[in-house]
Image (cartoon, rainbow over all chains, first blue to last red; front, side, top):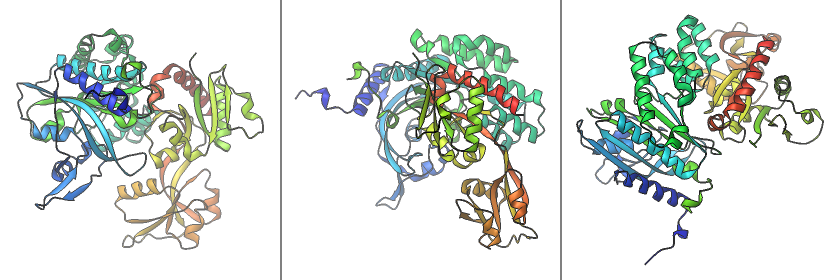
Length: 314
Length: 212
């Protein structure tokens, strides 16, 4: 029986369109069980968007959880092969407490993960696909891109106290420069040591516009090589439309115990929250005893319920 | 043409003061000063639409994108911790978040500390950081009366001059934070209305300097 595409809901249209995009780019569809041992999540609680998990006891007495996240399951169920590259995509329901309503919600999530040997080319491909995913949903999108190791390196020069670092990272994520100044005053960190970070946070926008400015700010071999890598990734974005909608913004810093290096986030005009987020999560891999590296992203379909879809998806 | 920038202002004395700053920064909207029952006020030439909301609701409007930017007290931001950008300290509406107790009060660490406050989140985080076990008594106003009537041992509240505290024989124990009005922005709106938001920021930043 042929079926009429008009029976599809918006969420299903987006889901199938994105799945087609990822599979056409060589990503293998990964399907997993709806349940997973609770232990996996309890050990990595901070990685989860919300730390509440729905649990139940299985017939064998094992404490199980309704999946609050996909990445952790994929890592656990994939082989640790540092010399190969596995490219996976998924679309799954996850169960989380919605920050807005405070109660559990079933959320459709789709995304992809690359596990194994991650090089600049692979990073550029993942970022391109993230941007293309947004582009399928709207013409008015922005992909925010950061290499969190750059602001973190500048932070190293300011303090080695974990607590102060955490507070400054929070302020950086809020573009709260006056907050950083206040913390520095409290902690007797001289202003000249906080200036490089504050300057870095003040330079943001389209890559071609801000890179010359950033080159002046990134002194020293380590920072320069990180910025060089970022430039190479941006050069690796082949579609000029994607390049023009990619904006560098170092206020984007992921959770330091899981993420490292390249992190990114996608916004669509008219939708108040980010609809896509991702990055490299080598720290998480290490925590789970893996030698291989990883990068991936998720698209949050619950944020897209109210979007007016472009004609191509209707 | 780009759509107007939606700006949520806190109803009340602080909001009036902050509107004056927006006006002086080059974003006036004369009809806002007329006495009527309108809820939103536009000035298409300046590209702005203002609306008054309850001060504690400003972060909700901004976080959910109904307002692109807004002005909220740091106390409200600390309490609700909305996921927004905090772009500027407007250096107005200054006060302090404090803990206070009746004169002569002696803390007995063996007992659970009873804390009366409007700011349950802030109080909980503050005492958790000191390792003190507390019992929160959530009140919506007239916090100062709670220790006088024996409802609580201490209060966590904001004070501008300390007069109300002194008149009720309360003594400040600790300052938790310095409070002032902050310009906040929705994360998505910041990306798509960047130029306009930056213009507002620049104008207000100059006004904040005047405040100091």
